[in-house]
Image 1 (cartoon, rainbow, N blue to C red):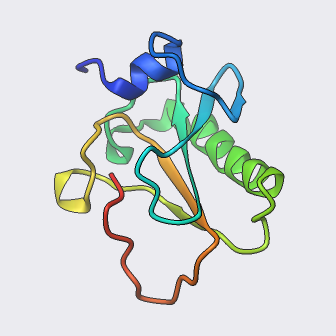
Image 2 (tube, rainbow, N blue to C red):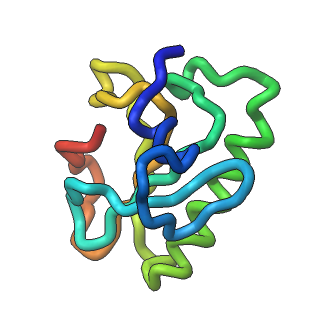
Length: 118
């Protein structure tokens, strides 16, 4: 897999404020937020797309979801947030290192697409 900006951020090669970090992932603010609260959960393991995850990634994927809930609570948006994973270019993914978006702080209705998420 080609190295990405998220790989460099998660390794600390690009100085970035981590809102949360552990041995499996980091959480940063999105530089182009689509909502008042918009953060990214980036696994340290470089998985290009969700469909590229294997059975051996099951624990990591579960961990990312638990971190999402914990971070949302810490940010004060635990009662109402959207969690988004884009998969592939046609799904809006532009950085091919799996990452999750937490979005909150604005109305999000059923069926509404969240444009601009990569």
